[in-house]
Amino acid sequence: MPSVTLNSVSSCSFVNVRKLNAARYLRGTSTIAAIPDELLSAIFHVAIHDFHDCYDAIFHAITISHVCQRWRNVSLSTSSLWTVIVLTFPTHRNQFLRTIDWLSRSRSRPLHLYMDFRDPAWNWDEASHSFGWKNMENVMRLILPYAHRWQKVELLTDTWAPIFTFLSYTSRIKSAPMLQDILLSRCNAFFAAKGELFRPSAMKHPISWFGGGSAFHSLRRVSLAGVHVHWANSGLSDLLELELKYHASEVMPTLHEFCDIISACPELERLSILGWGPQIDVNIVPKQRTLYLPRLRDFAFGFIDVDYAIDFLSLFHFPALKTLSLENISSSLDPLHPCDSSHILEYLAASHHLCTTSSRPLSCVTCGPYPLSLLRSLELHGLTSCGASLRCFLQETATLDHLVLSGLDQTNLQAIVPDLIAAELCPSLLELKFNNADPALLASLQVGTVRNSKSPSMRVTVVADAADSEDATHELMRVLQAAGVEPIILGNATS
Image 1 (cartoon, helix red, strand yellow):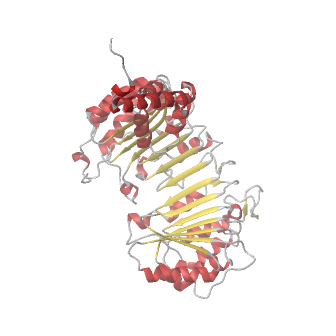
Image 2 (tube, helix red, strand yellow):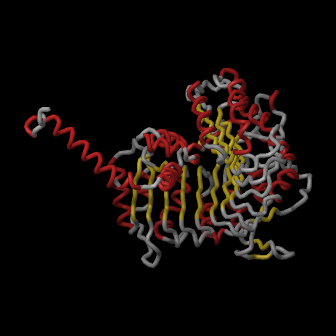
Image 3 (tube, one colour):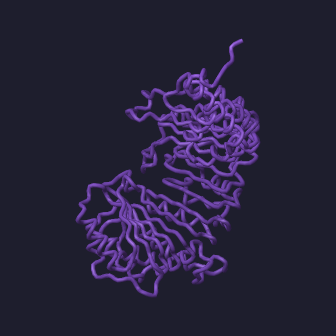
């Protein structure tokens, strides 16, 4: 047998041997290779659930499972990686096949359902939309058997038919023990306009979703945008967050029904009403004259009609309020005829001094229904009012840290901006933000203004139109710096 010498081994063989030895070394010493499967599984779980975007969760779960055989084995055995179900328009076979796989791989884990069936090319004709009730029926047949595992449900549509189908199918659900969050949105603010009726009228009849509300055991957060249910059998109780927005007024709950819902949520921390709240008949006395919410810290209110807005605001008492957002929705729905916000601002400023703990109206800034002096964050969007009303309102917010101003007209800006910079108004302010602002106008309002040296330092962020000139932006930067504040100028694309 001929002997094998070193000289008889090709140089190519040497390379292969060196690669083989390097691979053996890496397998023995690599940090990743040394990690136990249990720890690797935990790392995968954290990596996936660190993303707030559902699409990222899907993408990264797929990516991790395709790195190598070991990672695939570990990822497929980690049920928490497959709990986010995403279905979007246009639905296709691959989406359904992926969903079937995810439902199987997630085993008994709670599910997050994200369904977005909006069509960017839709022509606003309800009957012509490519995603109708039959398409939604196929989706419901797929996910309904797993209703006992639903933890969060998000459904966004352009039209009513898919929402109607969802509500009809969920009316059969007897128990949804894990369900904590529901967000349903018919994305069309048009129906909130004053005088608009719900359409299609044939589907206006309310549905008792989730077994008339009896299926809920853990529900804590609800957002209904343009979506109404059978309010008397809604099961809305023990909520921490409630949002109702962009409904036609005729499908909203009666005042008694609304009071029952709010009274059943004594731990409510956040309430958002954009558009219409309950149907208020001034001739009918509500069962409760004041809806007292001792834990509510965040209140957002978008109004269309001033008289209605004041009647609605008079229902509440929020002693722990810290964050307030006011929006004049009529400005966007009917730009030519926006309602004047002055009376709303005046009402809130006056009610701030009204003591509700006494049998007689007394002046008190700590126990009024809207304790403006305790606010830390305030947002004002699209308000049209006389400058004096806005100024008087802001004078009550002495402890404010954060203020956002969007779409204010020149009169209001002239009334408040110089004194906000100088700390004559809101002396504790740390952050002031202007959205959709005109840099040239803001600069002209602040010429010669200097911040009070005894006040805390303040940062001013201006989100300007990308078309604004660089000269105007540079001038605003100079004026703000000269006033003694820290300026940040952003374009709309970056904000």
